[in-house]
Structure formats: structure tokens, C-alpha cells
Length: 114
Length: 111
Image (cartoon, rainbow over all chains, first blue to last red; front, side, top):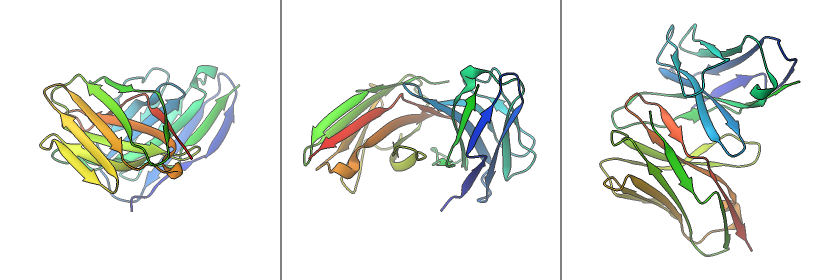
């Protein structure tokens, strides 16, 4: 089964501080994704990547950067954290395939910005 | 991109009855439609999916229907059990292997 891990699992940050959320997958999937989940909004796509060195903007990229230094790792960076970025963040990975393919989710990171 | 609408947002059913969740999408190029179940404090997990070359798929008490003309797809859970209580999300995949999610349905199965 796909293995996607995230760190940290919980994070408390101060407004204006820098936050880095990390994601690692061991399944050699080309595609990786970062979502945030807020009550009433489901999962919203922040950034995604098609492979090492590539990052693409999702639906809500403002205030976030992403980095994909390797096939296995995909980071989400909040340069200047704000309370509105308090949320649960999920990383996912998947392989591109004809007709679509499953995305496997990590356990999530609960971020609180004070 | 894509916009996915999901209804209802809250659904209560009696144990043993059926539950139905409906989703609509806008992009006719979307070709993959997964359904995820999420327990409190957990990550979303795929329970069933359907591709655009199919109209119906069934597995273990779950039925998914896809109407491409109407841009509508639905999940039907037959013989619901308390363990089916959870959040359910539909999604549609665009041309670029990007999933767009509905806002979720909170299903409660009452004994």
C-alpha cells in the first residue's frame, strides 16, 4: 500500500513566522499534492508537482510556496504565516495514468497560527 | 479547472436503509471520479471510483453512477451500518491529473 508521511503532525506557529511542512512518499509516484481542509470547504488544492524540480499552483496558492527537491519529498512553505492559514494540511501522491488514478493521502498536519 | 458541487451536506439515515450522495461537475473533459471516506481525525481514503468510460460500478455495498451528459455522478450506500458514519467526499479529475473535491457530506447512520 502507498506510504505517505508528513511532519510535523502538529504545529503551533506565531503570526509572521516561517513554517515548513514536509511530505515524504516511498512509492516512486511522480505526482504530489498539497491540500488544506477547513470545515465546510472540503479539500482545496494549494500546490502540486509532476516530479522533482516542478511545482504548479493550485486553486489557492497565495501565501504558500512549494518545493520538490526529489521524487520522494515535497514541502509546503509559509514564509509569513497568518491566522487565516490555521488549518489541517494533507499531502498526497499519485501516478499519472490514462483515465485518472488514485491519490494516496498522508496523515495530515494540524497547523495553528496564533 | 473544475468545480464540483456535492449534496447534501448532512445526511441522516436509519441502519439498514440506503444513503445517496450526489455530485455535479462542470468540465466535460473530467474523466475520473473517486469517492473518499474520512473518519474523524483521519485522512481521506478511497472507497470506490469510476472512470468516464463507465456508467455504473458496484463493490461491497457501494454503487457509483455516472451520467456524463448531465455531468452528474452519485454514490449509493446500500444496507447502511453504524460503521458507515463518516464524511464522504466526491471528486473529479481534470486533464492535468488534478483532483477537485466537493465540500463533503456528513453521513450519520442511526441504530
